[in-house]
Amino acid sequence: MSGFDNFNTDFYQSSYSVDDQNQGSYGYSNSENPYNKQYGQYDYSQPTGYPSPGMMQPQQPYTGQIFQPTQTYTPSASQSMYSNSFEDEPPLLEELGINFDHIWQKTLTVLHPLKAADGSIMNETDLAGPMVFCLAFGATLLLSGKIQFGYVYGISAIGCLAMYCLLNLMSMTGVSFGCVASVLGYCLLPMIILSSFGVLFSLQGMMGIIITATIIGWCSFSASKIFISALAMDGQQLLVAYPCALLYGVFALISVF
Amino acid sequence: MAGPSNDMQGGPAVNLFTDPMANAAMVYGSSLANQGKDIVNKEISRFMSVNKLKYFFAVDTRYVLKKLMILMFPYTHQDWEVRYHRDTPLTPRQDVNAPDLYIPTMAFITYILLAGMALGIQKRFSPEVLGLCASTALVWIIIEVLVMLLSLYLLTVHSDLSTFDLIAYSGYKYVGMIFTVLSGLLFGSDGYYVALVWSSCALMFFIVRSLKMKILPSISSDSMGMGSNAKPQLRLYITVATAVFQPIIIYWLTSHLVR
Image (cartoon, rainbow over the protein chains, first blue to last red):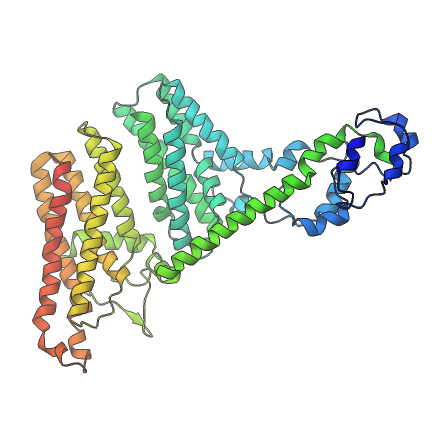
């Protein structure tokens, strides 16, 4: 309670004043009822360290909590609403921006390469799904005795950068790096199937080569399909699929050899 | 206002996401990233204009397939003139004779990966060797482009060949190189030499026919300058020298991959 002295009281305007301190001791703890009666005037809906909504607006622009460019509601109203009560808070996943329904939808798009893709699913870029897929790929490689997380990350970083440059040059509208990373990460899913297959059987025979070629084709076909529909590039699907095939070919090289 | 104040246990958890320090840090981080991106864009646009580069990547599948056929078998292609539309050259999508940078870039990367695979098959692979291959090839392209630029400049040839055009034309040899290495891997040393001869001849023909259109016609259109009419042979020599240089480079960069 004496800690209140150390806060800059001019940092936020609250109705708290130094005089309230004298009204007995209290701890910043969860024993609500005793001081509910004591500090009835005090607006305890603003917990310590939290500026009033008026202060917050000039201080920070909205940083996009859930979806990236589309949501523009003012932070102050929602956050003060959210902080008011526990039941009104958004669910944790929504605040973190992980939307399982979209993740599942994008995964299905990858798994059905022959079905036409919807261009609008790439409007919100999320890197949670690709991260999971990268880790799963590394884990399946681990199961077959190859500790190569570093190569996986390095190759995906270089590949994403190269695809970002290429797609920006080839398309009419630009593309953001997060979108490229997200698409390439999602289309890594069939590669996980390949490497888990490689745990059980050796991939170096003729059968392995055929399966590898099929999976590379599948990955690059779905990646190019999503890029084409999201960036509205016509007549360039094979041209986009070829660099994707090179990238996934390198991943396949790691899995096979 | 004081109504929901009994829900204190929501306070600390919400604090993490609404803490002004975390928000300020996030904003600072994203502004730093934006600043970095702006700096990179500014530096890149000082050296080359991205719009001009975009012209070279405006390709589609039909163009790429036709161009690859021409690179491998140029003898039946009739019309080598690059078409213009009101003083600007047509994009590669509309004119199959226009140079592009998609094929050379993809061919270069494919060549590096193929070199890695060839070395891996022969158990001579290591990441350093791959880097060595890549940088050797890159250096040879740079040397060739610089020599071409220098000779065109010294002989006051007023052609409309920009640096990117020269990079494109010197990058087309990688298609021949990939073909050569593949046949060397699949068919052994005989296949390698046959493919080498084939792709060298095709590439020489292609280069001579394409550059002839660009370098030599400036003789007739160039009415000023005394030196321009006096050296038509030198321009021919440049073209032929460029063409002869190609098989030498192809052999130099691929022979060590196919033993």
